Amino acid sequence: MTVRKAWIVAFAAVGAGLSFVMLLVVGVYVVAGNLANGVGKGSVGLAKGAVPAAYQSLVQKWGNLCSAINPALLAAQLYQESGFNPNAKSPAKAEGIAQFIPGTWATHGVDGDGDGDRDVWDPNDAIPSAASYDCKLASYVKKAPGNQTENMLAAYNAGAYAVIKYGGVPPYKETQNYVKTITSLEKSFAAPVARVDPSKQAAAAIYYAQKKLGTPYLWGGNGTADQGGRFDCSGLTKAAYESVGVTLPRVANDQYNAGPHPKRDELLPGDLVFFSDDLTDSRAIRHVGIYVGGGYMIDAPRTGAVIRFDPIDTPDYFGATRVTEDGAKALPTTV
Image 1 (tube, rainbow, N blue to C red):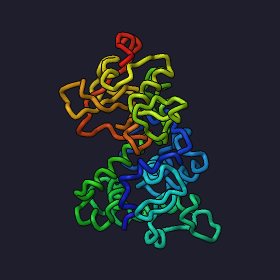
Image 2 (cartoon, rainbow, N blue to C red):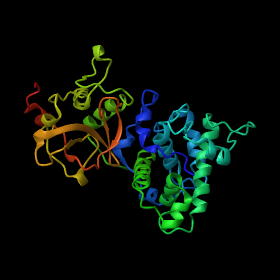
Image 3 (cartoon, rainbow, N blue to C red):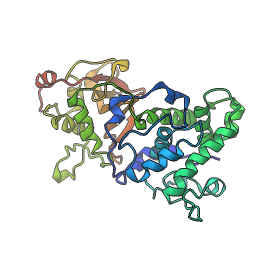
Image 4 (cartoon, one colour):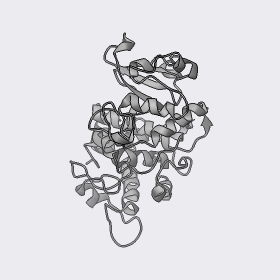
């Protein structure tokens, strides 16, 4: 039994309840390769400020419960499941910061703080329970071929039986996406070991966008007071770079020409990333976000959604632009 089947809606659940600001390390650092192997036992620390202060010590402690997990991986799960919202409740009746469904909680919930009860709404119980459940799943699938952490995540999403049956991550699109999402996000929560060294300008633009996480989307939004501080996609990127003195055009397909175009494997935090239904025509670009590293961007997706982290590796990915002052100055800034 999974903790939550309806995980795919989790990004939207981050919403206005997400009060903390993800630290800049989401995009400006590369994490050591041992993350890919799910190495625990204290080898991976949490990036400063990446987890809300109230949960930092809990995640650090319980993220080292077994070798299949580490604190950054546990943080990525909690972020994906609830956006660190202890009061989150999904349509599938998953509850709390770790989004346990009642049946799973009844079997796997633990009294993490030793106060005599097991409360799914209390992060002091729910976070230890999430780690404990991860480790229990890892023990169930320990003989399955492949990466133990990926197999554990697959079991978390699809059940241990499916992992055992297929000899690893099962061929379910939802499960494969879940494993990929968590292992990608994991790098964003880990303490840095090497700098990518984006420009100070790009770092500050990311910081601006991070402060807007959870803000509802508004078509044509520029973040002004009369608009409730809301943005659309290009309004957000324009405001982010305007905060560091670079004036971009208002619409996404014009912003594409504000600098050189790095290839996918050359992306740096702060690059603008673009999406289109016609991959041959830059004038058809319809969406833009700010790359933060690890295959993710911050963007204002659409009406009904909030500013959030989204993956960039989608079929409509068009390309990227490394914003330069000279490039921006050469473009018209009015529509």
